[in-house]
Structure formats: C-alpha cells, structure tokens
Length: 282
Ligand code: SAM
Image (cartoon, rainbow, N blue to C red):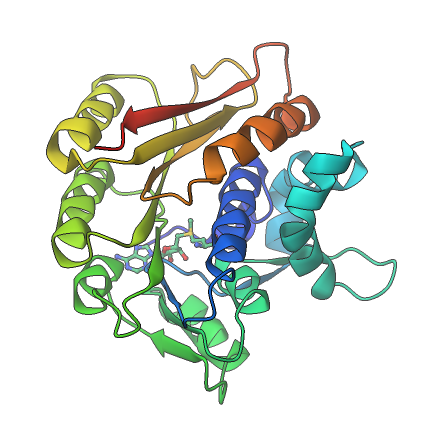
C-alpha cells in the first residue's frame, strides 16, 4: 500500500466527493431518528496542506483553493454551506492550511444521536485517524480492510445510514472490488444510501465498470454524478460517484451546484459535468 491521500487532499476529486457527502448527510438530518455513516476507506481524517507532501503536488490549489475563491450563486452557496463550514472549522481565522477528510466532514454533521464507523488499513494513517477521534463516543475506528468492513458493518443497527466507499484505486482490480462491494452492500442493506467513488479513466476496465454497476447492481433508484476538469484522456482528470438510494432532492441540488463547481475547477475548455440516472426508480 503506497498510496497516501495527503498528496491529493482537497483536490478537485475530493471537492466533488465531499460536496455530495455533505448534501446527503444534511438530508439525513431532516428526521430525528439516528443514522450512522460507514466510511470504509477513511484516510487519516485531516490533512496539513502546508506539509511537504501536500506542497509537493499542490493539488489542493486546483481544488478547494479554487472553490474558496469562486463566485457562487445564492442557491449554490446555500447548498455548499455544510461543506464549506466543515472546511472552515478546521482552519483558524484567516489562515488556510488544513483540509478535512471525509471523517472530519461527516463528524461536523453528526447530531448527538448519530454515529460513524471509519476504517483505514494503512498503519500510519490509521494511527492518525484513531488519535483524532480518541474518546469520542460517536466514532468507532477500525484498522481493517475496508472491503471486509463494508460487509461486517452492514446493516447498521440504527437501520438508517450512509455508506461511503472511497478506495485508492492504486491496485488493479479496485473497479472489480467496487462492483462486488456494491452488490454485497445491497444484499445486506438495500434501503441504505450508498456512495461509490471512482476515477474516470479511459479504456475497457472503465467501460466494464459502468456496465457492471448497471447490470450487476441493477438496484432501482441509482444515479451517477461526474465532474472532469479537462479532456479525460489521462486518469484522474475526472471522477465520479455512483449513488444508490440518493435523497430525492439530490439530483436537483447537483444540477445547481455542479455547473458552478465545474466552471470553478475546469482547467481547460474541455471540463464538464453530468448527473444522470443509472437505474430509474421502480
Ligand atoms: N475517504 C477519504 C477522504 O475522503 O478524506 C480519502 C480516502 S483515500 C482516497 C483512500 C484510503 O484508503 C487511503 O487512506 C488508503 O490508505 C486506504 N486504503 C487502501 N486500501 C485499503 C483497504 N483495503 N482497506 C481500507 N483502507 C484502504
């Protein structure tokens, strides 16, 4: 496992993922009943953007750096407030040098009755994650394989929940594991909201992934949201999220925020976005 997310924290792919995650959890807050967020590939939870690793790539400057400077419509600003507030909460005053990972963003949106379970396999990143939430009654940290965590944590005892599956895609076969994981998750928790993040790549593996997500998962009420910042000939010029059982409000919200995010993040005129229904509601 060579992948370290510190090199990529706050990049355009994180922006898409975290904006969507924040909208979904904000929707979960509408009912009093407790929910649990299960994050199978959680990372260390928080990132120092002034570290030599983050400085080396500077990817955050083309991600959250651009979103912070963008002009937003009133509606988009309102929809992105939970995400931007979570980012602001880990920074002191005017200084901007820290980015929250999915665990911190989720944590900022939990009410006292809600819980989260976060798994991470890299020993150093797990240690940081564990230290970050040590003693927090709402958070369970697990140093386990995320693909196993996906199965062992579903269904959550709250019976309401959000699953985030966000692997590194550094190992061949992660597309396959994602499809298998989606199927396993649905078998255990068919009513849950589930988010499966992926990089947009060219080639057969990508085409098979798309077809498999439709045919193998085949679950009614599944959408896909993608954002790419230039021609996607090279990997990670774009990323997407397959979302099973999204809040009914999400498609419309994404149609408001994604065009503006795309304008802010595009690196060439080939940048773009899409939100579409992968499998319609039955
Ligand atoms: N979800 C995080 C966020 O949004 O802030 C970023 C996660 S990063 C894309 C993927 C993480 O998965 C890395 O921290 C990596 O160490 C971890 N990882 C890789 N293989 C794993 C596995 N089999 N089980 C659990 N974690 C794994």
